[in-house]
Every structure is written in C-alpha cells, then in structure tokens.
Length: 366
Ligand code: NAD
Image (cartoon, rainbow, N blue to C red):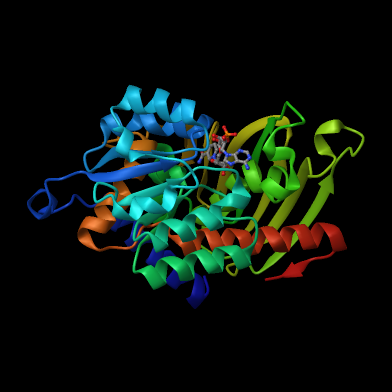
C-alpha cells in the first residue's frame, strides 16, 4: 500500500471510530434537542426522513419550508410544527430570526441545493444537503465557502455511512479481514418511470442515473477502499428515442483505479433494478445485496476460508436517525461530520471526470 493510501486508511478509520464513540458528557452540555428545518416536502423528506425524528436523541423537527401551502399545513399539523415555523421559499430567509432552528436540511431537486444551502448559511444555520451535493463541482465549492464564511457546519446526506451492514463492511476491511482491497464490483440502478419528473430534466437534475443512483456505486467504491481514485474510464448506453432519456443518460458504467492498485467496476442505470457490492482481497470477500437501500440489507462473506451469511454488529439507531443525530452531535461537540461538504465535492469532481471519460472515450486522470 502506498504512503498516501495508508494515510487515507488511517484518517477514515479514525473518523469512523469518532462517529461510533458514545457522546461523553453530551447530555450535560445540552439537554435540548437541536431543531431541524426540513426544506422541500417531497417523497424523501416526508416519507423517509421526517418519521425518523421519533427515534432521534439529539434532533427534533422544528420548522418546515415548502412552495406548497397545503403541504405546510398538512405536515405542520401532523408533526406539531407551529404556523410561525412554516415558511414559503420566498419567506425562507426569515428563518434567521427563529432560534428554534439550528439546522436546515435541503431535500429539493439537485440544481437547487446550492442556492438553498447558501441562503441557510447566510441565515446562520448549519446545513445538511442531500446527495448529489450539487450539479457541478464549482457549486459544491461555493457551498463549502458559504458555510465556512458563516462559521456553520455542512453535511451531505450519505446515509449508508450510518447503516449497520455498511459500517461492518468498512470495519472488516480496515481491520484487514480480506487483506488489501483488490476489486470492488458495485451495481446501482432502478427503473425510472414518468418522463416528466425532475430527475429526467437536465436543468434540475444535472445529469441522469449517475447523479441520482450511480453516485452510490461511486461513493461506496471510495468508502470501501478508503482511497481516492487516480484514473477513470466510462461507457454510456442511452436510447435517445425513449421519451425518458431525451435529456439525461440511462446507463453509464465506469471503472476506477486507486493508488494502491485496487480497482472498481461500477454500474449506474435508470432502466434496471440493482443495488449491491462485492469487495475482494487476497484473504476473502464481502458482499452486500441489497447494499444501500432504505432497508433489507443482507451480507455474505468469505473470511478465514469460511463462506456464509453474516449479521453485522447492531447499531443503536437506524441509518436515517443516526445521520440526523450525527450532525447534531457534531454541532454540540464541535466536531466535523464524517460526510462533510468535501465528501460531496470529491464525488462531483469524479462525476465530472466520468462524464468526460464517456464523452471522449478515453481514460481520464484525476
Ligand atoms: P421529490 O420530487 O419527491 O421531492 C422534491 C421536492 O422539491 C418536492 O416537494 C417539490 O415540490 C420540491 N421542489 C422545489 N422546487 C422545485 C422545482 N423547481 N421543481 C421540482 N420540485 C421542486 O424528490 P425526492 O425523491 O424527495 O428527492 C429530493 C432530493 O433528495 C434529491 O436531491 C434526491 O437526490 C435526494 N434523495 C436522497 C435519497 C437518499 O436516500 N439519500 C433518497 C431520495 C432522494
């Protein structure tokens, strides 16, 4: 292993250990739960994230931001968010005057992540922004700068880093259970429907399957190896006569080369259902299928010449509540999130390299 990748291994192992550490004295520092404003009341916000505050120790739902008054009323009443803490997008900047809100969670179409993150930071709030962090690396850089200028923390919604099977896989790899990682094979895709949805609109999504679901293959390859790629290959397959794919790509498969010599073969698709990875080394392998779904993860390993299913060490919270609480804990103890803005920026730089590699039909050095 090279010096650089060893350092990366050590840094990410320390970050993982810090994330898993109990919060010594946190209750003494603050007995108040930090208040979240949820911005964008679509599917992920209302069906997946908002119900999970119930299991949080350090986070609570304090405000709602939406362009639709009916949604503000419906979810405000359902979650007991007072009218004074329900904001339209136009009135959102007034959130600066609401001391109950510590964090704004941006869950809108991708191209709006930058502007809402910047407005939240200017209002003096910490920010969680959904993946992909933005639709360009330049936007990611601006978001990092805005939060830094405001002295506020920025986290990206990479929830798999808080999921038990994924935590177990990373730990096994860092502990050397399979030896140095040699290959990662990972497939992420789903069959997309309505051609009119924002995910198929380039201006709102920034790209196709890679921005939305293939990013899980990319991010997993990075957290499993604990390294940053040095070269990228890619090949796209899109039927432009399909009404869904007038503006964005369907399949884009890519390969990553890491400094240690490890490689990743990654699938990203909007016309096939897949969600898995397999990591191999000289001493064994780890497979999770499904790997990064909302639930139902299943793991198989070959370790010490034994092959079979493996149950990960139990985690105290589900991945969504753990992610919400992680940022609250980081704010309360002044630590940096394990998935901060730099993590989102790294993925966007690689996504740009993957698109370039596919377009130009050549290996792109990064
Ligand atoms: P969605 O379409 O269900 O919700 C999007 C919300 O944004 C809607 O409430 C919509 O009204 C609002 N919106 C505001 N301005 C809009 C505009 N100009 N055009 C269209 N909608 C607008 O989408 P979603 O699935 O909730 O995804 C939202 C974000 O969350 C995306 O960035 C997506 O990548 C991310 N996401 C992450 C996960 C995860 O597991 N981490 C899962 C799903 C979605």
